[in-house]
Length: 614
Image (cartoon, rainbow, N blue to C red; front, top):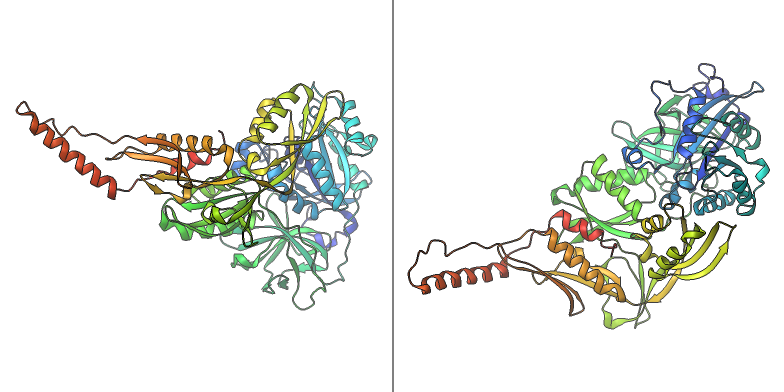
């Protein structure tokens, strides 16, 4: 790839829409999306070799630590094709983990084409199928690409068969690359220019731009990421947000190029950003339409499908004085993570906080790490829960994701929990262990298909409450990392749910309450009580830890009191003197137990959070 003539990106207004290609890279987790994006960036020569590093689009410290992509990242790549024409390739790198599917859906909506990457050693996996169907829904041109062809375990012929059989794509059009070595990258870029259509829309139309992401800058306010479907946007223009009718004057527009590259204007078909000094975070909604204040468009763009969280947990600051800082941090995080849903919450034990909805347990862990590392907050998460549905005797339907809102058991006619359709693709030697795991998680087998002589696809209906904790980790462990997992929400099915309360010194701690399946309640209660016994420090009085359902105690642990030897000063003499001192001590401890408070450390809540590993 030749380097673009100087100033070509800054002179973006002379770039015709026929010269623009918007595409994303989609694949199962760990199939090489970020590595392929690195090769594209090196070919475009928009960064020197000295400044380059691997996973250059993964800007968050957590992404580099874990080796996974969490946020979709866009970058504009100049390219001169073999026929001498100049192009601008707008690339969006996407996550692969199922918990971040919403990031993928937003990236796809900003593109006309997609590279569907398949690992030559792993083949087609569950998330590969899921992402392809999502791209087809948005009418994207799909280019199948086989990656990691340099590895000794690569089986290109088998993967071609899978692309044809499993995906229904023309395997003869599949390109073969090694993103690590750079093999086949030039041919792939030429294919992008030839196969992916140019964007639609004209400059003469009223401005219509879709907000597909945003982030917060301490000095300039909210930086809004947009894809233009019509019209143009330039500095000094008055723009309006369709959802709330708020207006702002544009201070700067530009494209993404390993940072923010300022340009004169953005046209129909472009992917870029604008800055308008927006300090009111609530004005920005991902999926909203931007239009011109003086010449507005008639109808908004369709936006995105409403995100549906599956795991719920409450966040509280360790120090109650940090609540305002936590509220500000949650607002800024929401800008950058549109799948995060939260509302105000309070607890008698932990004070004021937020009740949050997540797309999975990994999503919860990432939010926790980002709050701690990016915003320097000390926080506590309560045990995760899912949204249950209860039918009451008066016919009312009640949805409950917080144990505090659990209705009176005497009024409940029927309890239901959400189920998922789970798709598992595994090598056949691990089939028995995985079936055992699914049965343990109350799964109901719906289908078992041999995709070829080595791979099996399992379809199970399972309660989401059994999956969100340790299912994914155990699946990878049992299959030595080869099994893949994808799911979609199904429906609600009848179950038997009880509320497990935890008493410390006879007092219920609402932040430790959980809604659990009845047959698992005893095991869960024992686990939580043992964890709390190990984490809570000893006090001056004995502390009973009890797990109860209704009024019945089903588990108990006891933390013994710290003992002071009050008879140490007695040297000989009548035994009654020692008895009086011991009796006095016993009465003191009894009084202390009645009025004393049990101090719960943060580590105690974190240990209960992991109580799914039962």
